[in-house]
Image 1 (cartoon, rainbow, N blue to C red):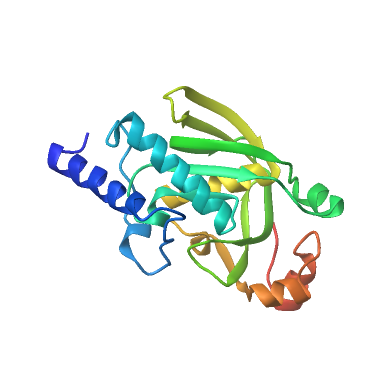
Image 2 (image 1 turned 90 degrees about the vertical axis):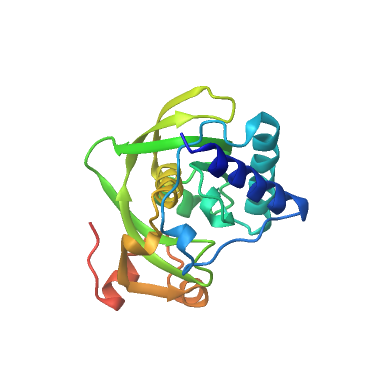
Length: 214
């Protein structure tokens, strides 16, 4: 548990962020808050402030737009993230990537472990690394544990693209960016991905750019 003074500072920081209204500023790579990890949530914000913070994360994620957002990405070092994915992609892409719609979810103190040995690699981006994407090999299936915003226990297996989302967001809470796990030879601008690498899988990019897939 954080000392009382630290808890008060965290609550004050969140109140300051919320006071501006609208989407919160997203922290870009290079600032320490994205690399220092987070402290477990154990009531630092109180129920009402937590509800307001979660709503602000939801609004910010939608405005970006993105399919997930972790508290450190708005400068708050607490182990909280939100996810939501309407999966607005062609059927061929959805099938290749295992991308299915995900409702809005709040992840409090999440952790994951692989469920099986299969891995899958696809282009991935991040709201804190704007303008770029790279191929990341991740567990194809993970077991996620944690709580929701009401303190109810979560213990759920995610597969396909939802598994990728929860890994990406939970990594943020451990001070990791997707680039730490990426095949750097694949690093491409968003424009290059749209123009050249929009296929359902990254196999053409791997062949052209010279990297291996799992």
